[in-house]
Amino acid sequence: MGKQMKSDADESSRMWASASFVGVLIVIGLPLWWKTTEVYRVSLPYDKIASFDSLSHTIATEVTVMANDESIASQIAGLIEKSFEDSTTLKVKVNKTILSDSLRNTLESVADEPEAIEEVAASVSVSKPNTLYVVQRSPLFQNVWLSGERVMFFRDSKAGPTIIQALKNWVYQTSVLKAAVSESDEARRTRFPPGGGYHVTLSVAVPSPKTKLRFPARDAMEDYIGTFVDELSELHNFTLKSQWLYLLDFDFQAKEVKDKSEYGRHFAVRKDRLHLLLTRLEERAATHVSELPTINLVLYAVPCERAPLVIYDDDTRVPTPVHAFMSPKWGGVVLANPRPEECRGEGEWEVEPNVQRVMGAFVAQLRPLLGIPDMAHIPDAQMDPLRSVTPRHWEVDALLRLRVLEQITSAENTLQSLAQSLGEISNIVINDEVGASINAAVDGIGLARSQLAAGQLVEAYKSSRGAHRAAETAFMEPSLLALLYFPDDQKYAIYIPLFLPIMFPVVLSLKTLLLWLRGKPLHKEKAD
Image (cartoon, rainbow, N blue to C red; front, side):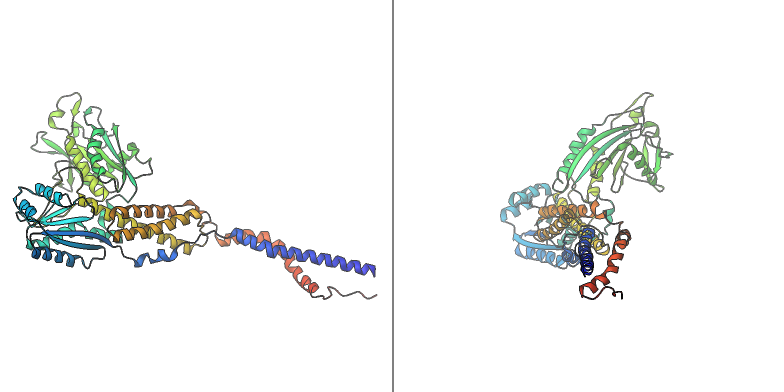
């Protein structure tokens, strides 16, 4: 009897031990394993990201028509409103006013347009961004005259169609804005991508040891390039640098052509050969050491024995006073041909390029590289020529609109691509830093949209730049790749050999444990 009771007690202890083991494994072990092996993901605004496609990009801007009488003001204002009413990008608010007698008399009596601009600027605020004044001035020799300020003169009521062309093609550049939203414009291939800052490096390349080049590189950068980029300080931070590269020779494979110049000949180089020079420059320029994009400006001093070097497009000589070429998203090169008198003699050649002409060519190359396109001619309309290296004020406004749309569109596409990848690949980790960047990008896009709709260009640019930077940071975060090459099948392949030996006895003992819990005998008693 005592032996039977001892046997039952041992059996009960063994069953309770098994039950405890199973309980710990199922209640604690499996949930703990599941929790520790799950992919960590913070909550993201997927609905807002998905709604980007349905939202439009609307830019509010303001035009004020100032005419001699109410009839002309109403006619021009109505024509402008009608021309932009179907625009999905630009929302033009048109105001109209009548010129005062004193201002009208002054505009009709002053000698030239720049003086007339000063008179207009004295009566209205032409320094306010994203505004334009369309002012009647009867003595014009053409229908429309566009200044470097935010002022456009027109002659009379017949100038309406020309005003619309000038607004669409020059001031607002509607085709460029439309293409920027769809990311399909041709100018995108040339201009640098949006960014917080750029390095602008002037490299003076002197291939021949006999050439003694006199060129004030540092002062020229400050006086010309520095003055130009100062006007774009609202958009980017620029760092200016200059360097000298000696003995950087390049075989242009130029063909000598006899002519009637002072040299008696020139050397013709094919246009498609010029870009091979960039490879030699990249080897020596060392401009790739910074994280910021670098805009390269190179002055190549042509040796006297190969001067003058003339660029040919196929078999046609390129008619230009300065022989230069530009490489999209890289920079530009100016070929400094020495003058005939500088190449006389057998010793050193002292060469002094025309600083104004060289730096003017570099500024002309910087404009499309930074997003200021060349303007096509409009019949019976004239644009005031650039009187300095600084961009026109309305060009800066147009560049702000372009960059805002470009940054918003890029941020939206980046977030949508990231959201699609997160939906398709379940084991991508989304930590708190990535989540914060994505939420900051979504909030920045929404803020930039509302500021654009209110016509606040500078504020919208700052918000869109922050959104673009946050989206890029989230997309390029290295932690997203932490488990990318550790899919679920590999996870189970590693853990199953670990748990399977443990689970076999647990599964086999479950039947015995259930019978014991129900009070049924675990084995039959042996008969005496």
